[in-house]
Length: 241
Image (cartoon, one colour):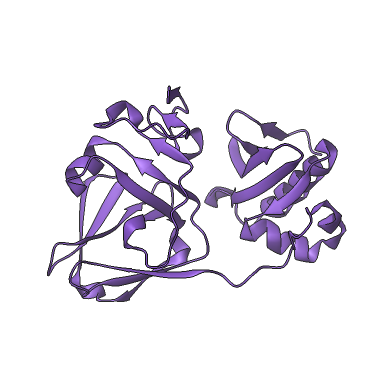
């Protein structure tokens, strides 16, 4: 493995440092297994084969750790279809070939606007920040963050309006009914399509964000972040359950 590659267990990700910028693969570890969740190669590193180097180093690290592998990340899955020597790492029943991508629809209150999402969310959880509380008129926002490329407006784009209080969040709503639809987060290159709007989607939260601003306490055993996980640009600090 290259010297600029490391396993950052504090952030739950494998990292490849190149010219002061970090490309990474996030993961979840459990006894004897590891699940690779998402690969992120910053745009400034594009076109240099960094993704392939990161993928190879990541799978070599999994082998060195003696763990069985499960793959949710499309990039790693595609890499493995071209590099089949790593397929022996897969846990039983965890095929390297992609299953048909899940497909969900969400709409506004009156139905004038409809969006579609494909695949799996990168992160899913609950947000307790003051902005979400004010925007939704509710104490908690159930969020599902998807890659921007996996979200599209299928109907009523002309009826979709935007408000942004900060550059971190561009909140989308229907001009006709005022129904909230989604929030773009440009700096994270992710879109929050509100989980309760997605038809057929089962919300599987993994964390609470901005718990320091909570209006109600939730004791569910999930991590309670003061602000955001480090992978989303936060401090990574947590609070008691």
